[in-house]
Image (cartoon, rainbow, N blue to C red):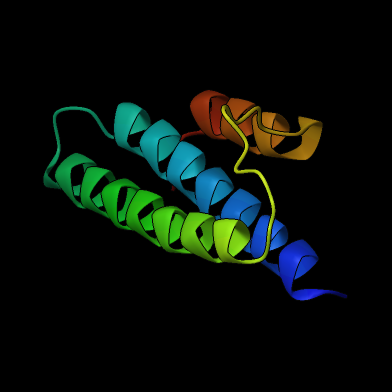
Length: 85
């Protein structure tokens, strides 16, 4: 795997984490845990920005948007149905 491929994968993983953390925060609305998951989402987005720098350094193009894959959307749906716990 090239550095560019690794960086793109890292960017995607961090964006996926941020998306899921926000889904958990919405499911935990009204609790102290909601703020914690929002902070985690923010941190994951910060990490994705670091990966974005690596992508650019290696001649790549940073994706302009993130669309979660079917597995990620399924996990979020199950969490809404069954709760995070």
